Image 1 (cartoon, rainbow, N blue to C red):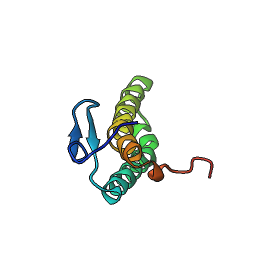
Image 2 (image 1 turned 90 degrees about the horizontal axis):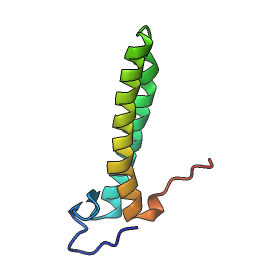
Image 3 (image 1 turned 180 degrees about the vertical axis):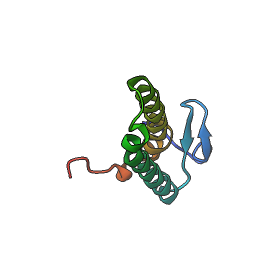
Length: 92
């Protein structure tokens, strides 16, 4: 887990190459937006690939996977890392 102080809490953590958050509220909004973005992508992937060749489907799936991975790595994980109380309950 990263250590945060007033010097590196805002903007970008150069050492770990990730976004940092000034408040729990900003981190929560980013986390929730990331989760919503993941849900939106998940909701359209199967419709987006319907009728495509297997090769075309694989290209689209890969692009969606890259986008979703980026959302997790660049938005959701840094928000939760900065404020562990934002961790969602995966058992529900």
